[in-house]
Image: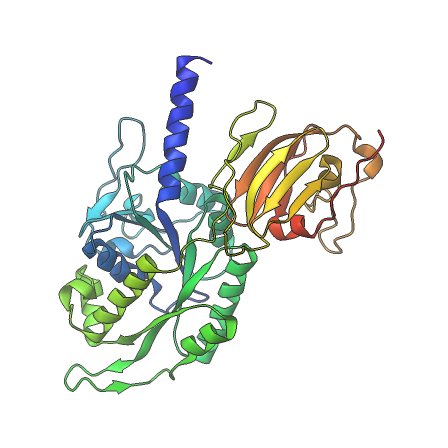
Length: 402
């Protein structure tokens, strides 16, 4: 191995270590207009005031608002570091990256899905974040490309779902919760925003959008309820002025609610354990194999992997609950559910097994967020997504006579 290869491996190792030491928390919502960005900005400031190193990615590419809420000027493009990474803006001790910094104030971002994905990956992976304890990702509303890209490309610590108490908002928030659960992103909790109007004169709370719906859904689905944030007239003024509520009015009911939510995110809701993510295992080169981790001594989840091994027989997977599974590589290839191997409408297989060699091998395995892996095979196929749930459902491979 050359000195250059050694330097590259050390750099990759350091990058993986940095990404795994920081918490990546997505702030999401099922629909727009629930105050998600306001919640994100205030939580970020509260975390920074606790002494944490905080970054914020404004992942709403089409409607970026975080810079304005933090008083960041966007009339000049960001600088670049010597190694060609974007240097983020800073405000109140928080590092920020947003599409608003790359375009004029009144210029719309007219982008197709693949370009949006490219920008998002750049915002997370090609920015000079330095050492961070927490990176908050302020997502656009919905359950589309951006949410799926984040879940696939980055090992999210978890997601916070923001809703209002209205039934229509809560029903859509439930969809967002289910989406995150399907891609194995832990739900750190629900925030009920606009939970009553707090009178600036008398302090009385009027529940203009109903009451208690966020907590009820949290209890129904079995996830934490992080808190209720009331509407206060000053929230609008502080957002427009670029000085969040926790700074401008730290004793207000809303500011105290934000601080409480931030404290829960720091002190509770640890990750589920499992392999150190992300990983990119090149079996053909013998590099990048994920390090084995110990299963929880008190029992573990059936959808979390703690070790991978590979030999001429197949892929051995050990799960956090102690179960060990052996699957032949050919069986894995035949179980691919991508559009080239399965009919998208019926789900029926269209891959002819006779076209898959008995001696097919895996050449590369890489992580897809928290919920699955991608596999490249010796026949050139590499587009399948194998969720941990689907892998666990496969039967142990029988050794076939070649």
